[in-house]
Amino acid sequence: MIRILLVDDDALVRAGLRLILGSDAELEVVGEADDGNGAVAAVRAHHPDVVLMDIRMPGLDGLSATEAVRALDDPPKVVVLTTFHVGDEVVRALQAGAEGFLLKDTPPDELITAVRRVAAGDAMLSPAVTRTVLEHVGTTTTGRPDRRAAALAALDALTDREREVAIAVATGASNAEIGEQLFMSEATVKAHVSRLLTKLGAANRVQVAIVVHDAGLT
Image (cartoon, rainbow, N blue to C red; front, side, top):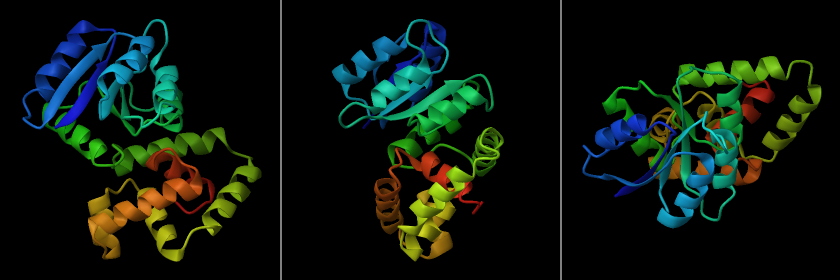
C-alpha cells in the first residue's frame, strides 16, 4: 500500500482527493491536515509515503511546511498542489525538496498515476513543465556566472554514465524512459539517480535538473 497524507485548508478539496485516491486499491489516505503545522505533526504520527501539500494555507504555509517535512528523518515524498501552472512559489517548493507539483484540477487517473510515480521515486514533472520551471530559474539567475561554475564543478564529480543520467533527468524523463534511452534496466537507472542525489547534494530530481540547467547542458 502507498500511504498518503492530504494537506489543504479546504475540506472539500481534501474530501475530493480522498474519494479519488480511495478508488485505487493500492492507495490509502492515512491522514489529513488543514495547515502546515498540522502537516508536520501528521507526518510524524502517520508516516506517509507521499504528502499532497497545498501551497497557500493559513499559519504555516505549504512552502515552509515542505521544508520542515523534508528535514525530518526518513521524510516522505512531497507533491505540492496549486491552482497556478508555474510561478515563483512552485519553484521555491521544488527547491525546498518537493518532488513535483500537481494542479488541483488534475484528472483523477492522472492524479493516481502521479502519486504512484512519486512513491516509486520519479519526480512528477512532465518535460514541458520541467522546461518551464528551468526557464523560470534561468530568468532569476541571469548574470550569475558563479552558479554556472559551481554546477560545472559538481558535474565534474560524476562518472560519464551518471552525467548521461543527470541530463536525462533534466528533461523530465521517468526512470523507465531513461532506461529505454540509455539501454539500462529501470533498477540500474534508479541506482544511478540515487548516487546523483548524493554526489550533487540534491534533495530530489528537480534539484538535479537545476544543476544541469545551471551548467548550460539543457
